[in-house]
Every structure is written in C-alpha cells, then in structure tokens.
Amino acid sequence: MSNIISRTIAGIGLIILGSIFLVLSFFHWKLLIYAISFLVLGIWIFLNDKEDDIEKIKYNGRKRK
Image 1 (tube, one colour):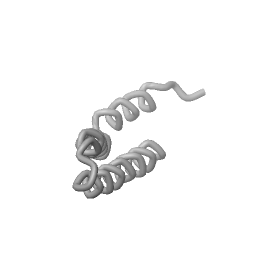
Image 2 (spheres, rainbow, N blue to C red; image 1 turned 45 degrees about the vertical axis):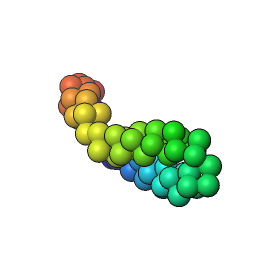
Image 3 (cartoon, one colour; image 1 turned 120 degrees about the horizontal axis):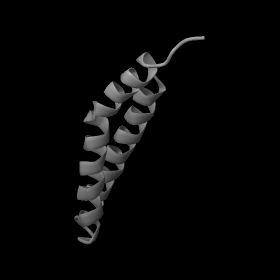
C-alpha cells in the first residue's frame, strides 16, 4: 500500500516539476530538455504497475510463522 502512495507522490511531483520547467522553457530554451525528461519520467513512474505485481508475489510467497 505504501508503494502506491510513494509512487503517486513521486510521479505527480515530477509531472508538476516538468510542467513548470516547460513553461519556463519559453524564456530559457535549455530547460526544455529537463522539462521533457521530468514529464516522461513522472508519467512512467505514475503509470508503472509492474512493481505492484512484484510486491503481491513477494508478500503472498512468504510463509507465516
């Protein structure tokens, strides 16, 4: 459950940062490289569900004492 929360916070944070850099890139064109990088990384983190499947397998495979 905490993985979903941390993934959401990190993804949304990078998307917001990328959007801010995208707006600022109209004044300084070099920021466009960072804006695109942060946006792509943020969207990828936000939409990545593979790690959740790994966590489910990891916790379901444990033996309880």
